[in-house]
Every structure is written in C-alpha cells, then in structure tokens.
Length: 368
Image (tube, rainbow, N blue to C red; front, side, top):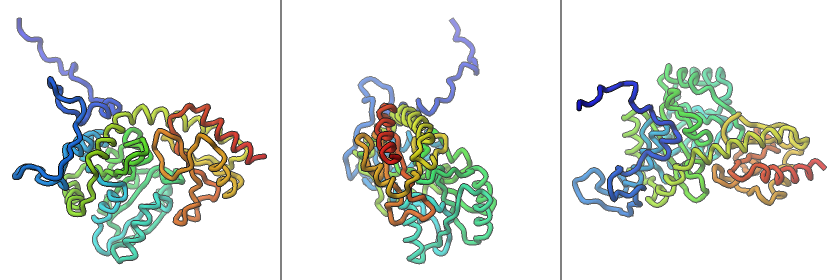
C-alpha cells in the first residue's frame, strides 16, 4: 500500500510558549534516557572537544539556555546573577560612550551605570522612558550614545515604554537597545520580536520563581553580539553553578502556571486597592504580577503596612511563589521622584482572598 501524499496543512503548528517552557531543553525521547537533563558537576572535560573547561560551558547551562532562548526568540547565556549579566552588557560600551537609561529602574543597574561613570568608563543619562518624544530627543542630542537601556515596566514605578518606536529611533542612529524583561518575562513580552538587540533577565525572579536561586541571563538574536557577550562571560568568569542552573530550569518549567495565577491575583488586588480610602493611587500596567499602590499617608503609612501583615512578607526581592512587599523609598538610591508612600507588591500564587484579607486589615487600621 502506497504512503499517503504529504499534506502541508497537516504540519504541526508552532508550539506555544507554555508548551515550549515545558518541552524545550530536554534529552531525546529514547528508551532509558532521563526525562530531565542531569546536573553536570565538573570543572574539566576531555581535551580537544567543544567544552574543554568548566568556565566555557556546561550541559546543564545548555538546557537552560536552550529553553529560555526558545521562549525569547534568540540565543541565551546564563550568568551567575542578574548584575553579572548587566555589567557584561555595559562592557560592550566603548570608553567615553554614553548610555541612556530609565530615571526609574532597578537600583543595581543604576548603580552599575554610576560606578562606570565615576571611573570614566562611560556617561549615563537618566530619562523618563515612558515619554517617547523625550527619549528620542535625548538619543538625537547625544552623539556618543552607544546603548539605550529600557525597562518596561520600570522598577518600581511600573512605567511602560513604547519599545518598537524607541528601537526604531535608536537603530536609525546606530544605537543598540537592551530591554530588561524581568518583570514581564518572555511569556508577556518578547523584546527581540519588537526589534530590541539584547534582552536581560534577573533569573532570580520569575524565571527561577522560588526565591532560592541567584542567576541572570542574556538573550540576543545577533551571532556577533552573542560571541562578544560569551567572550566577556568566559573571561570574567561570571558563570552560574550547575546546581543553581538546574534549579532555575526546573522553575522555568512552571513559569506559565505560576505567572497565570500571580497575574490574576495582581489584577484583582489592583482593582480592590483602587477602592480603598487609604490608597491614593494604584500603579499597575494591566499585566504581570507587580502592583504598586501609593498610600495617602506617605512614608509612615507605608512603613506601618509592611509591619502589620502576617501573610505578606516584607522583603526586597520579587517574582517568587510567595507574596512580598516593601516601601521602595527606604533605599537611599531610590530616586526622589518615587513617592514616599509607594509600596511595591510582588503578588504570589496564594489564594487571592487570603492576600486581600491580610492587606485590607492593615489598610483599615491605617485609615482609622
């Protein structure tokens, strides 16, 4: 019996992100093959191969990088921390070049820019990246600009940038664009598909997702940029341990379900917070799992809130399964343009009614 004719319409459709997160970076489906990539604990490989030495590569890294790269639409590199990834990207800027970055951004990124500027490495200009016209004007006015750094949403103000418009303006001037995609994750936003050159993650946050790993990652589409960044990682030794990478990959497998639950909780909490008299403003971009209410009572109200709950954890990190919060202006480096009463909520996957009850009883006491 002859084989049926091939029907192009019967080809398997492209996998969706939730499926990619589960299936990418797996060993081949062969008898007796492990379902998960093993943790490869080694510093040295047999000579004359592709790896040679533990600083250059690891099969556990490769599985993580393949999965994250598939989700972001590029090639990924794993790093020891988000800051290791950030500073590696900044190394692409030549001596005397400049970087335009958000006025509200992750404190570590801003501190890295300030440190490089203090050593004469580069110049940094901080602008309101939600103001597209202002960013484009800054790009055109700075002849030395080599890099436009974006966060969207920003940390902790939750401002959203028009990434395609800013990428187009930057590329017209020969300027690379990097987007910190930690808050949105590749499930909600894929900056490379919007034209960005480099994506950076604090994999400590949503990617790993369980508040037990320090890791970072970079994803790029251009092979030349990939080679330059990998060369910097290899030279500086900013590499993650295989066990941390294995944990981050395990966390990445459940990102779709974790984020779906956390984002649904965040949307509901944002709605309820907006109606509470102790809350002056709610910053919430309409997606993701970060909400930033601004309390009418300012710093005192914010400090009371983070002390007056039993379920919410007062902590500075975010993106874990547990709900955490903090008043951001408690940090000396937080800009004065962040309201004193802004409390950044990282909404977890607990039952939303329990989360709201714990917040509301504290807010009610503030209002009283």
